[in-house]
Length: 88
Image (cartoon, rainbow, N blue to C red):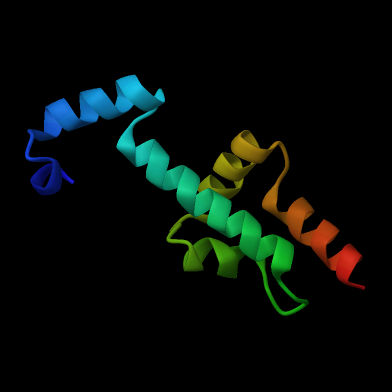
């Protein structure tokens, strides 16, 4: 991003945070969490929370579950359970 914007990393980080209210790393995490939520909502009986977490780049399922709950207000297992109930 720094090369494309032709600015220093600190300037880019500062401006991103000022404009969006969160850091570039938090933005990436939100994108990955949103993707995980979509996968959980559309998954079949063969998917698991751990598989989805790993596919979305989360190495620690516990941290993934905590971040997911903070952003969406429920655990990923609850999202998966609800999705399976609607598919049945």
